[in-house]
Length: 236
Image (tube, rainbow, N blue to C red):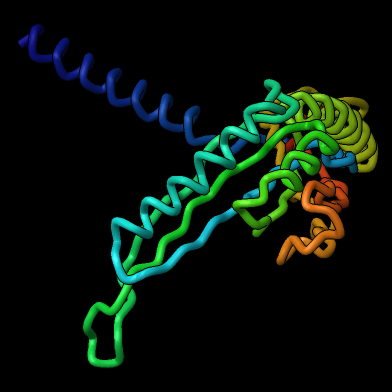
């Protein structure tokens, strides 16, 4: 009988402890403020990417493929003369061959396309090299931030965001009648928009320049790097 009473008492204590734990866990935090702040830095784009293409068509797939390979090999040889790590990196892009059809759905020829990509921070070296590569035409020009530029800009924007977060937290704490605050949790995220305005490539669609080896004219824009700091603080 005494053993039964002890069991019942123990069960009651366990249930009380469980209920107490649930109350503690589910209790809503008091005087907690959610907020976020941003730091924004506008920076000059310092990475240039140029895509040069060769297109060929003919009745035989092997002939078209051979012509594309010859054009790409010649372009690679010329580009590699000026290659320098980080300043002008050279790589091949897409290489594809596809059939051309008649209205009746029959194959009446083949068309192909090969790409060469020039990328780096030395704009003059890249544009001059592109101008010398006569077998291919410039199709696309894009600008971005190099890894070094992105890291520097992100660090600067992060400092601005943290300072803004702290100032905002202090102002809000005082506004709600508290003397101070303590951080509870925080997250930091960064991004960039790729460019404040579209990049420009002037007169390069057909690459019709006064001289065969004239530099391809380009103009970089600016990118905006944004760091967002968000989280919660305990008002006290």
